Image (cartoon, rainbow, N blue to C red; front, side, top):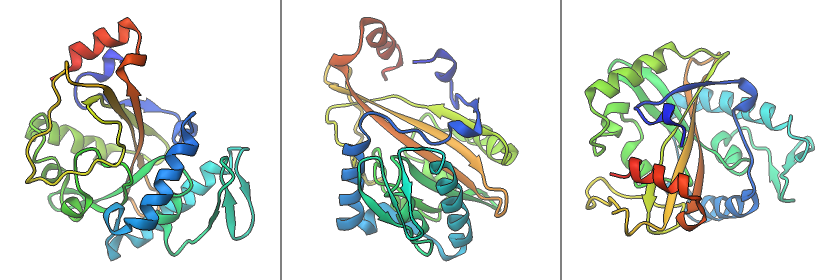
Length: 247
């Protein structure tokens, strides 16, 4: 609802300690993540061989950040989450492991001749896109079905990625109207458009997206913390803002 974030790409600086957050629906979201990783792993996880080093670097940074949260407990071989679930620490499966430790999804992007390319992801909560169709593609190609993401926005985003530094995070947020509260909401590029009319919407979905440059590999981590809120729970001011933002 911050007006500074309405104009694309809506980027703001963020302190390093603000990277990963945990909210009041942690237990429910983590239970869903566990179930998806167990039963639909091929749909929520992808990692190109060339990105394995970047994935391990991301794994190390996530564990470093989570060790600052006193509600996690640690042994040599596992971490116990605040909801009491123990997760084996498997550095050979870096994205799958961190996908079971925190609410955030993580996408790895690496610089290529035509811009940054999606080379790995743990994506349990896709919002109308499918990981299998996007892996190995450039940012501009990934956003092909998004009318607002034109070549001008693409160049601005590319400059942000190129200028990202390991000692500074960048954050943005979006807001989209939904009929269903489903967090796992994949959609193929060939599927019909799913724009939701404001009078049909029952939920607003917002993604807190953080850009972090990895110091060793030079890859960029794009982390996504997803909120799903019933519109009926919003106050009048928030609803008025949604009417401004609605397509």
